[in-house]
Image 1 (cartoon, helix red, strand yellow):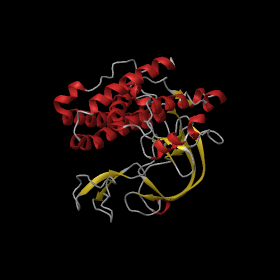
Image 2: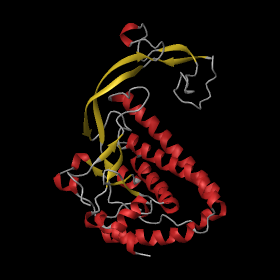
Image 3: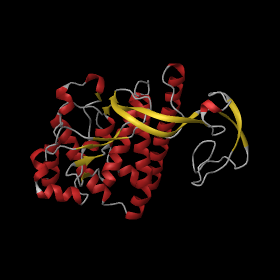
Image 4: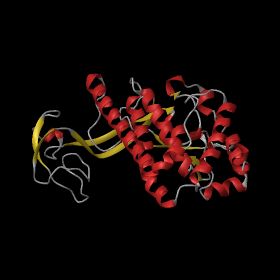
Length: 320
């Protein structure tokens, strides 16, 4: 089915927590810290996958190709080869091991994508790029990369390679109140200076979230006084408008799913049935990418391009 009115996206607009610095050295430090932390999580979770595989990890299909390949036929040839290798490999792994691996490889993929979003203008950009390919390659090989068919009669994908390589984000025009993270009063009504450090007693709310860091599973002891920086916490937030931007202030304000144009193949009942039953998969994770699609370089042609999606899905359905 052809996309109606062009591609559609599902986006994250903002996250809980302090508002990221808008620019300058503070933003650079913010992006560097969170980017490196994300890459470390991605590496640790990937290492856990290898541990769970044990001796079988040495037999796992290898990511032994250059990450970027402009020739579509070459990309598809590698994807087919690797798909066949993964089908043979996954047949040797018991279900209990797969169940244990799944949350770790998903977390590795997610953390690697976060890493790129923080480090897209950093010297570690290519390290993040490689981490995404590494984790997505294993996730697709073991668990697939489903293309779904929704009630709105659209095909959708959250493919890590397709999503992460489309370099854009969203910026929202917001109206909100801001409360002080130390005392909970509106910023204009309290005496705490944002960015300065003050003592605060650690506690838990009804959902178990820590008053110091906001996490439910942290190590801050309830009742202990800890010195923390004051920051403005948005509440009663209302979005008045949302715009696509090349570099969002909230680094993780990104696309999480996009509609998938299958062309005439999307009208095939077999394709639709496969998508509805979770057995129609994207192969983009199994081979090289075309490089990053930067919003700053977009033109009308590149925005509307489907990059051969329809041909790929026909291949998936009719090849053994």
